[in-house]
Length: 190
Length: 270
Image 1 (cartoon, rainbow over the protein chains, first blue to last red):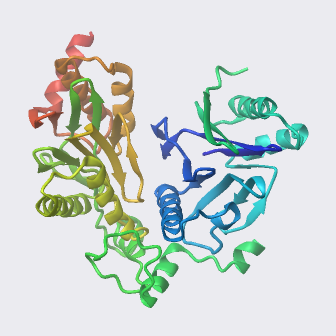
Image 2 (tube, rainbow over the protein chains, first blue to last red):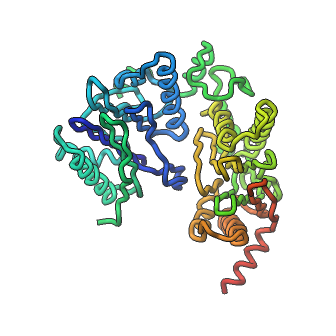
Image 3 (cartoon, chains in turn yellow, purple):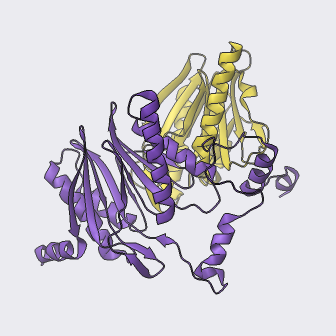
């Protein structure tokens, strides 16, 4: 039901998540933010079982803040990954910008499988959009081209996905930090 | 799945027994003192299922379920409306159950799901809110109160608790409305409805809602939401209990029988 997507460029990572918090057939909330800020340049996108998502993401978020307080420097991006199976059914995308390694996007699922990828998606929507990303992705995408690619994916969801996802939060991470972009609202069916 | 087997993924219940047994508290987000000690390996939700009608043990103890409750924020505060039917399977256990707990003059909690769970845990929440006030010399915020309740639910995840509740209050951030349920969901929002009649209530309040409603219009919308839901949902009924959360505390607005209300509304229709 929920959807996450990340696209890595040469010096940025673009991420988007849908905004629906649902319970059975009802949309309880249409402006839910599924991105959690782990540090100035790292975002954790988290979907999965109700309750687990927020609990797990906040747990990681607070522990990383604690690490920062104890050790005066913050965790590098690749160490922000949780590496053991937990009882929490959550699927994650970890996106960030590292001083030494540059931009990075990591795909993680509830079994703690971890993969660094140039683009990734979670949810039923992934079945429709991964092929679009395969077809049009290039490692040297500009920011505008990446946003256009993201729009292509969301239009496809609007057209073919049986579940209505009315809006998507979009953020971009680069060397200057995390930037909020305009919310994407697909209009009408084609 | 190969990765599934190799990773040693265990269901929540098995891991819980293991972690509690060794004293590791990594994944226990519940309150530090568990109210009910649960022995490792016990499966309360399986036991509950065996006692109910589907359990086929000849026993038919169906827990109280079935409600419609709703709450929405508007310009002049928060409106809270609930029905009053307590059902146990197809039997109506009470037609005047009280589904709103008055935690303090600035906090209200609604109940849907299992009546026993709601009453117990929300009374416990009331106790925690009082203790907070005594320890910190200021009233607890709505956000903190809802987080306390959410953490209580998380301490017993997967064990068969059933509770869908809204915490409504007014603190120094203004009016607050949170939805908390038994699987640990905690959401802040403008409008929520819980219980098995919630879809009917959403239909009415979504179509009639305006942020700049007058107080009387808001009362009428709350009444309408519950009445129309009780009309369609077999497990909701009784009376509408209507509360209004204002800056200086909540007031109880009215208590009206839904059958009278629905006749009044239908008369205006034809």
